[in-house]
Length: 180
Image (cartoon, rainbow, N blue to C red; front, side, top):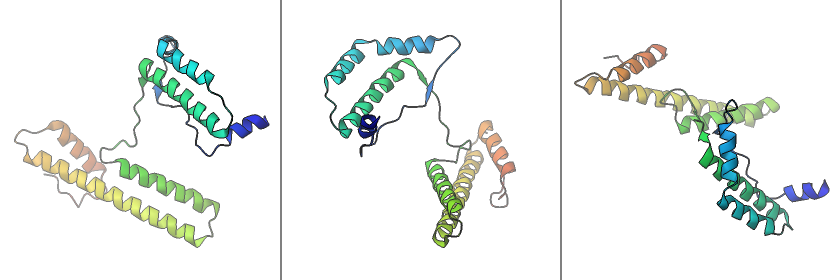
């Protein structure tokens, strides 16, 4: 156990197994396709090269782990379908919103651990203010763009109109954007 602990206490971060693959347990086709990809000639040569490498340091062990994960990921990419990852259901909720939400959650967790710390409290409220401001501006610009798109079309794009109507009915700032 001490040797294993030594090998994995590396400064070089080890990659984790990817989550975003679809496995179909009912027909077992995905399992056989994955095994077929692993039994290919390319994978065999890569594994043979890895088996010949000596592992003496923590960095070697971390590098070996990363290379094994790369081989498994390549096999999964060829054999399995990827699952779609959604950060938000709304069209206006983009990467900036997602990152700010993560920042807010982290600040909230730190504040809950030490609620009497004024610096953490200030950091949390600043993150919350920035997140809300960004959400409001992104949603407002999305609705303005959608409204302009519906107004400027000679033929009505009914999907955009329905989306605008749906977003408009759920929007609390409905006084900001007049509907048609």
